[in-house]
Length: 252
Image (cartoon, rainbow, N blue to C red; front, top):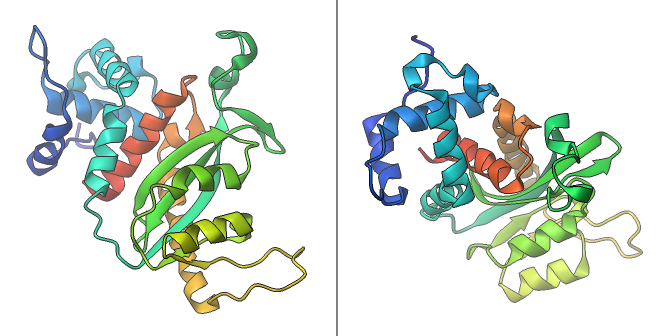
């Protein structure tokens, strides 16, 4: 089929350093299996609906589940993003990802604990927090339940910020502790103040307009059906789907 996705030789060469060592029986064709995994995630298909060109669907699922549990796909994205070369500006933001009933069902685990799914006005959601560079390429990703404040994501991502001059964020990140944390790192905050502030906060409005690039990044990630709609109950597996989308779109 001409519309199938296949990793190129150059792309495989960039990914191979992150492959786990094969123990015992050698793995089947890595290029075929990984291409099939990407195709399934991008189109939101069931594993049993994988095209025959990618081989047995059980092989695709087993590789996906095993490597997701080990964090291999997240390590691939983080490893390739480490060479971003950004020295001036990063952006922070968060977006909601709709949880399908297969992910939000509480039947599999008492109380649904640890799934990072929460109820919001829009229903059951997971929230994706992200840091991206000035070109809108994701550098750091963090997943929480949908009702969790943006401050929680900011606190988790703050330690991993690169050495840059500016950080752009919306009003959701206007907190004194966050501004002080950025100042301690030598980063200037371009964040508008909340309307409740008695004293207005000055910020570079012209620079702030560039923040639309992280919104575009979220839009491109949501073009992948398995990212826009969360089907996976396990948050680690879902984060792997997001990392794989970011890897293919921006870093390969």
